[in-house]
Amino acid sequence: MAEDYYLLGEDLSNLGSGNLQYFPPIAGVDPIEATASEVLFEGAYVNVFEGGGQKARLASAVVVGETKRPATGFVKKNYAVGEVVKVYPIGLNTSHTQLTIGREYHLSDVEPGNLIFPVPEGIGRIKQPLGTATRTDSLYFIQRKYISII
Image (cartoon, rainbow, N blue to C red; front, side, top):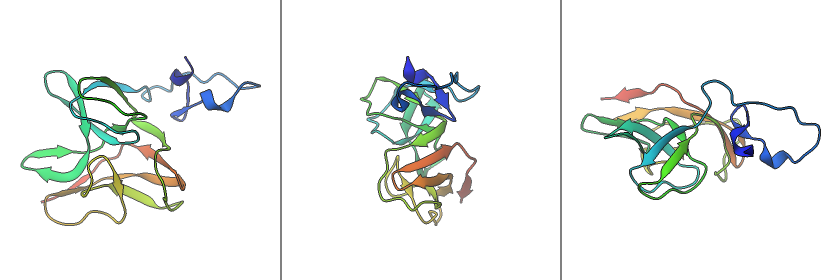
């Protein structure tokens, strides 16, 4: 199936036929499968966690009590609660609009599952860079460590 072949995490099926080389999934880049614990929207940055099985929820830079929800990856389509989702821990997220090319974006503290610029500030937040905009509609995501602001 075309969606299972990646070049730096990108789906190659839209490149058409011709003289394409075969690129098997890169080790560590395969999608993570989890069950949606809430509605997930196309392009959302999600947090994969253990909750009676591997689950996925919207990532957020807001810390609630001891619960942190850093981005583990992103999803490429909408999912309903209970559906098995594919979370991409690395790759090109093409579900954005009006990004500034070359700008580094961070996990949002305003809208769960989204990105933000500038970096979230304030107590009870995490600072997690999501990636750099490669086009006005695309961000290359690589899972990165985050810093908690206590």
